[in-house]
Length: 152
Length: 106
Image 1: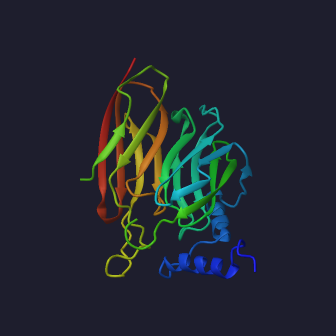
Image 2: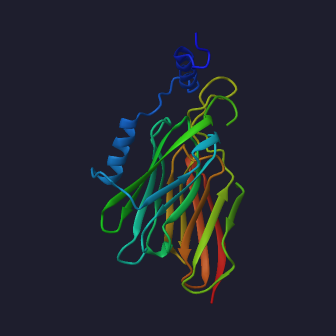
Image 3: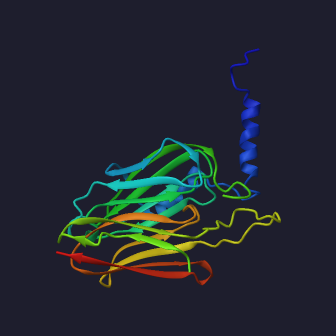
């Protein structure tokens, strides 16, 4: 027997425990995230690029994860970012936040702190004034999940 | 009244890009978390935030339960003219709060 390899049965048990902590409320799926992004873009698939989603790769506490979204844009009257949205794939809800910007922002950069229920992928989508959509993503590993019973 | 903290530079040069940080005390109860009695606590979150610069909206955000307790939002704006920035948070159970900050642009 090889004791160094993690037992897959135990891994499943851990996953089951994480799901139970939500007391029945199902977590979202990557398909639901794709649907939420489509709802935001009006059916268009955002092109990868221009958007940088800055977040720690390994997060100790999922209750407050600092994220920064930066979009490459001159932010002029004719060419600017009109909206930035952040989506996740494994929280109970896929929407995280939607920001409305305009040429008066001067710089397409926003920061906030979010909750993450488990290790997952985050996607930020930016809508430009010409109607195009761009996206950036980040994979985050969470050791202490948000929304687990009691304080949090 | 929740405690709110807004950081805006007191003075700026015309055309300068300034950073604005807004923090407000709020539990942001997700609606997925059980309380002490085991029952799920009702959702109670701040749903929207906006910043108006002399009456014109320069930034807004729509918040969901995945935003951490005591929502913190940082963004940028161009210092166009002297005046007032008005920050407004609105949420569940009739929550509404407004803060203002003055800026002198030279």
